[in-house]
Image (cartoon, rainbow, N blue to C red):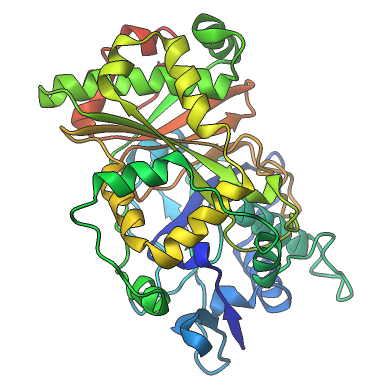
Length: 433
């Protein structure tokens, strides 16, 4: 079976999506989150609904990227149970994952670890999967479907309540009805790399991207905690007319720029802010589509303007670029991947913290159905994060314990030392590590 990949799928090749979901055994059940049961549920959901998870990437007909599911050459999941001697509360500050989902080496494309602690009721489910087959919304659906299959292992007639749509044709059919409009950031990166952009024939794009090496994880990670009260205070202080997301982005953008200037002793030309635009939720493509359907909305802001501007003005500038994303912009970005791949590479090398640029890539996962992932033992108590692949990326998780949020930040340790001294940031956030 050949499963065709969409354009946005192949653009993510070499990256992975991962995370840690933390469960607490509130009973004396010795079979709580039992590895064999979790494993059997995974095999069932893959066999019945997600064969793409055990396939291998290749170039198919018409030079399109595909995942080949060959029963004689399956890419089976790597599943293991680990015991950790550290206390559970210390584990998250010291974990160092080298096992990541990959196709490029002769490893599994799906990594699953069930991690238990001595004398602790907590069990961690760690999962790493290739980004080429799932984005954040799609992996949340996959995890919920895996959990549903696990809960119903004893019912051979069970069918998923919301089975996935695995055919990328639904994406093509939708965007065929849309007229492309180039977003401002495309022109920005085109102009920025005007002298160095390389033209690549569209016929070889899939082969080029599927030959990309694995992107190594960036392991300098930090965690900030914002209580609900402090988060609302931040919004009121920045601009009560804006969303919390935009207000937080404004504070992070200016704070990280200031730290960047202190660390490198120079003024960056550009300060970039990236929000994802999730077409799963904003188009007529079925919500249950299982592939990648998220696009980047990027605000290229002049650093001097950020430094001189108020937080309210920064939030408004980010909104102008990142809150007006549409299907028309998304279609243009698909065209860019197919026909002007050099612009994608230019953006990739620009979105980071260096002497010439500062960067905040902010993804809010609070709206995703992660606390509903119930394998038959109740939903998770805590959500945590694996490693990102890019410096500058940040993820927001809701914290069910106190109605707050946790902000995982991938910034260099040296840069974070300057962030820790920011009175503005410390006014609202507690530093966890």
